[in-house]
Amino acid sequence: MKETAKTPPRWMESLLERLLPAHTGEQIVGDLREEYIESMLPQRGRLRANLWYARHALSFLPCAFRQSRAMGMLLICTSIFTMICMGWLAFMEVVLRHPGYESRMALELAFAVSCLAAMLARRLTPPRIVSGKYLRAGGLLMILFGALAFLENVRAVHFEGYIFVISLSLMAQGILTLLTLGGSGESASGQSAK
Image 1 (spheres, rainbow, N blue to C red):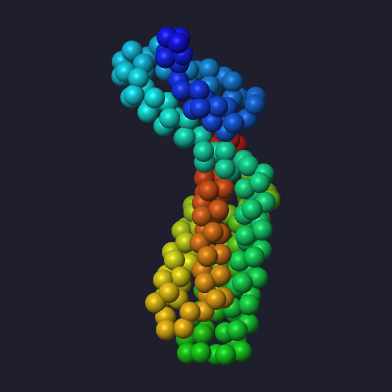
Image 2 (cartoon, rainbow, N blue to C red; image 1 turned 90 degrees about the vertical axis):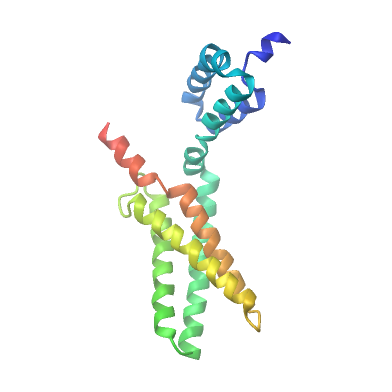
């Protein structure tokens, strides 16, 4: 019992082992465990050492998301769905021609291009077409405009179902772009420099 009290919590180590690739995971888990036992636990006590370990374990989440095949497929599927939604909305804008439709058409085209860029960046390793800062900016704009559209739709006199779907699709696309591609431009250029 005393021996397990000197090691990091098992669930944190298990999480870390699942997040890291097999070829590097054992070394990183071992190094963190060694630093936890030899440095952090004696200096900081159990609670603060556990918090230190949890922070380091969770720092690998963005890397795991970017490398996850399932997240990549989800990003591509969401991008396709968002592009279909943007196409439908653009078609409706052309047919109905409400005041200000030109600016909305330009915005819809920009989001469709952003979805296409996210799909291309996910398929190309390393991404050579779009850098990480542009993908982050596009993801943040999608979340912002999706949230604004959602709030406007909720406050509107007549709730529009397709606006609800499009706003949720934009927010999901933005979040997935940030999670899976946000730092890929920097990491790819950093790897090529090595």
